[in-house]
Length: 391
Image 1: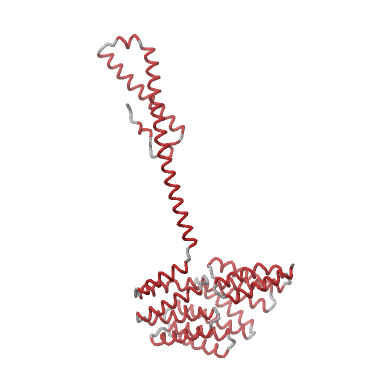
Image 2: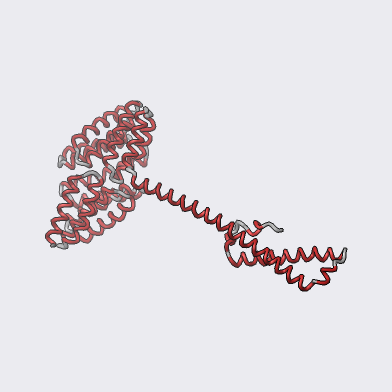
């Protein structure tokens, strides 16, 4: 008899009923022709009386037998394939369940704890270079996405590892950015100044002019936040002087764009709005030329603030809206927060206070995410007050 596995094929059509029907028909015709040929050959060489006597009835019976056997093979084939398919489906269902369980575990996992645990383990094993490599790579993304507390935690490990590894450049970078500027963003100005000043000392001793420039610019930013504008100006002058010694053209351009932004912030504090707007626009242009969307996006919120202060509400709304869209695209939380607050303020300026509620609510959530509990509480209270007045 013929092999039942002949019906099987790796083709996707193997479970198509028209395909199976054609295969069964061909097998039946082939089997009939083969065995009939055998009988004819036997009859040719040796006459078989029973063939001559029972040709028509015999043919009918023979055809029926072949069809019956072929149908039996088909049933066996379908049963075999059904069992195999059922096994495959169960296997795939199991794999799917495993994948879903893994995804759920990943979703529920505390990413912060996982990162800190990995870095802490490398630190405990004195793998200083590994700590520096991982921490330095994560520094910027953590800042952009508003993971300030985590950035400080990892920054402490990087700063310590760099000290053990005698890597003053990495240590200075962690002190100036991860520990210094991040703490400043959270309003911890005394701690921020202490970290940045220590970083500046190390950067100066190791000839890291870019970090010296950046550290002084951060000190200028802290002084501006505290309304110490003379100190802010002096720090910015030092930052510009250090930038003159930076050889890398891209870093030099980045610093120049940052100077425009810092100067604009100081001018806004002094109510020099036209000058501030001009510098914000120039900073945005320079960052865009560099392809630095992460930094250019923060300019939209700042420009919106100037428009709002000068009562140009339509321009303010456009700037905030553009900034909000781009900030969400690049996951820059501080820029997103500023634009949401700005849109709430424009709603108040237009006298449509109820429109401010969703902006204030979302801004409060982001403030909580980045670790600014005081601001989150303030924004929540404002939203509740507006909602209460509406009711």
